[in-house]
Length: 154
Image 1: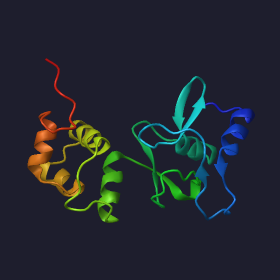
Image 2: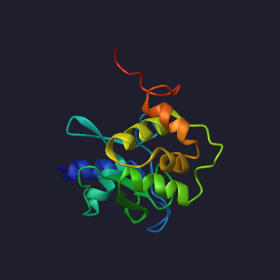
Image 3: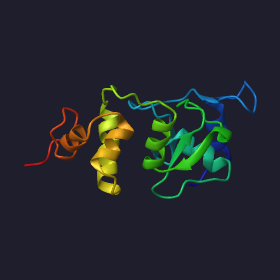
Image 4: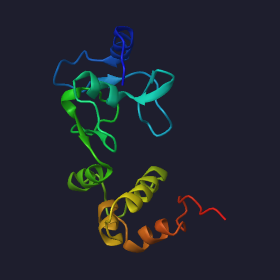
């Protein structure tokens, strides 16, 4: 990721760092429909958290994402960010109690489950526990039968 001095200045101008070095630094720029903060760079949108990590000297490796210690999606403070996988993120959600057994899955949850089904060897039961649903629901997602699943192409 190549950033010019102008890009860096433009990025930080969209971040509220007024709380100091230990507080959340809130991205006030654009965001997409999934509430990921977006920064326009070299003709495409890049997640603001990815830029923050790169500017901190920790660019993300392929297949990894920026995860939050603070659980605050708009936060771009590199001290609050770390590199992890989708599996790490789901495990973190479960360990921090952000997933309740009666949680209704969102479109984003289903998309993440679909990705995990393809990229990991996690069992339906394990995924169900991580997302607070039964293994049957995970099976429905795998088979394209869940209401938010991408329908299989005919």
